[in-house]
Image 1 (cartoon, rainbow, N blue to C red):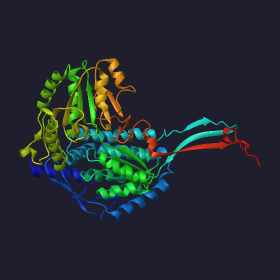
Image 2 (image 1 turned 30 degrees about the horizontal axis):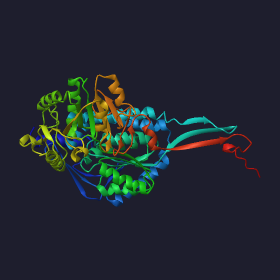
Image 3 (image 1 turned 45 degrees about the horizontal axis):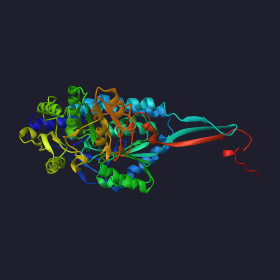
Image 4 (image 1 turned 60 degrees about the vertical axis):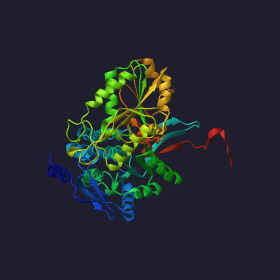
Length: 517
């Protein structure tokens, strides 16, 4: 596909999704504005300029806050099933535009088309989940220790939920948060990544029309594209009742400190340093497929990407051979070509971090089983295409302890029993996702026990990468401790209240205390 043809295709997608080439980057409902700096969106596929967005400044931020505050006063009183219907309509709208939005994710972020479509499917799935949830915001009743008293717990909307998202899932993370936040009665302000602003414009377009058609206050969904300053404003703002932030551990620590200073609430989804333990009883073919997808999917730019494999010494040579064979079969190139397995890194900064990591691996004693490097040529014109690499190395060295957002896999040997492997796996600061490959029931149960994986996600015979909507998603330690998506993750988007009702004619105090006048 020639350069001009490619650009025409992107233009056609943007036009159908309601995005202009020179787009204002802030919105409350269907009103667009922005007085900040220009953000240019270059595709990592071919380095073409696919859109220009005018970001928001401090004044624009205040405008979105006021719109959100006013909207909340009305929205919180709408019955939850009606709020669920809003999310149902959003899910239907996303279904109608799945192909185009999936393609845009691939163009702007660089993940494969199948992964782009998969991300959009996540949006649809969370909407379906949230619709059901809107009729299940259950509290709890209990008997009082005092006669003729009744107690119960209930959940109320929080207010304004701020969402800060990362480039690697430019649409799914927004939907995970807003779908739950809206059915819980909150309003939302979204600051997307500066690297994927066009995707945010599309999401706002999809919901804006629904708000208008259903006479819902426009401030229920607010968008403000901007730089780090906007994120800091949100972190410091007492009017933001919950700040959900997805990104690097460094970013998360800054958010946590700022929100903590005002005793606010935060939901943090940060870095992962995810490992797969490979035991002697493993199904090697199954393990290799899981390892390879986890390591190279999205070009290693998932927070759940497989960074480390911890392999028993008795099978490590066999694993080396099979992984080397598998990596030779990988096709690297345009992510919209479905014959390719690996697309580009997001930008040149990411490439430089990848190349720096390769050098550090060698300096710290690593031995490459599969060599990495930057790919050159006409088909790699963006200079963002790199070779997935595998290095045999020790777990304790600094480069292994640090999350490199790129397709570099570290091979680490263990000996003795499974407990030794678990000790190695847990010996990092991050705690997002983990997995074990084994046919041994004792090993799998040990891995899932109190003395097993210390991660928020622990899998058996499937990889570390990916998440299902039905389960709560998130990790421990420097991953931040937050939970999004399924299970009871909705509770963080609400404030909890305990109620006691006295239906007697007496005043009975707790703990048997008497107070007579």
